[in-house]
Image (cartoon, rainbow over all chains, first blue to last red; front, side, top):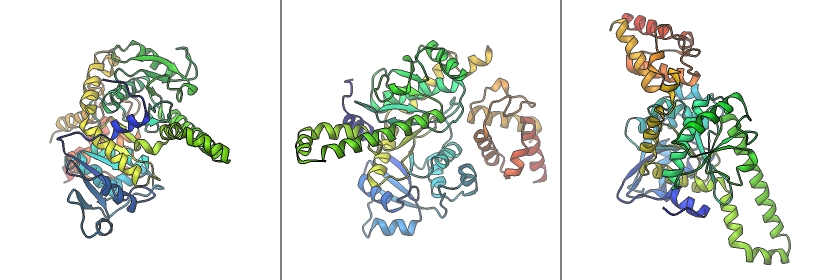
Length: 361
Length: 82
């Protein structure tokens, strides 16, 4: 397997469609700031014989947007309720059984679809995924896994928000899940895993991080680099970074925010004068490459890792392109060896100091 | 359904759905302290119990379920009423 060199290649791998396999993706047509219009547009742009879409939402409106000659590869399922971003996620998922997101998740849980995509509230997608798609056997806590802007390639980061507090064993499982994601979905051979902390020494960090360092270092199935610091994320010292959901979310937003400002300022600088514009023309290819590497929408949202089927959370403000990428990446997760590899590695890990072994000591 | 059968079913849910260590699941085990489940896990447990036993559990009732024994008691009462 050849190593990946550019963000474009990462994008290609993430959105690649497997030959000879038909994937059915249930899409929450009411999720996100631009629903249902952009969601329907996204479905129209990706649906084909091998990638069938079920749009779940206000059926009449969705059909209207699909037009007079709808794609034969798009199905519409009625859902009369909507979960709004200001609702308490768990309560909303439990009290609204006919919400588009809940119906979509249930469809996946019952075998009517292979994966689910929503641009709705992250908390609600997490709750719907847990309650209706259910976690993979042996998974203590599902984690939200994302591709974070880094140079030259994005880095796999988890957890970025599912678990504010974690135990050391959870971090070890995140490492196993993140490693399987990097190998199977992106195609990185033997990815290197780092633990986010406040210093390289194993003694640095919270008690949970210090303990997790020991667990990761002792696990022969994990290609463990050691601790990494915040400044190492964008420099891409490792391929996969594990962290609790609270710090992970801050790290993600801080990096994305910094990347956005830097890209904006570079673009301003290179278009500020005629002389700069000539320089920009010469550098155009490289500039585009940097911008792509740092654009979160390029990679189609975040994965909820550790469930029985892929669930992808698209950015709430996604346009059709972002949602289309999320649908493609969900499809990619179905056809890749992600779930079997993750299941096998988690089972293997029980023999290497996993939950069962931990209980005995 | 006997009390033992209900316990076994609740235990199966905890082990299969929430990946709780089977050896830790006793009738006196407290969900949060002994089984280290969080609030999301408990909602998942309640929803799976509703499905499996064909009962309805309100949020207020769910808040009172703190041990495995509480869960078994609740199901036993609800089933005997139905």
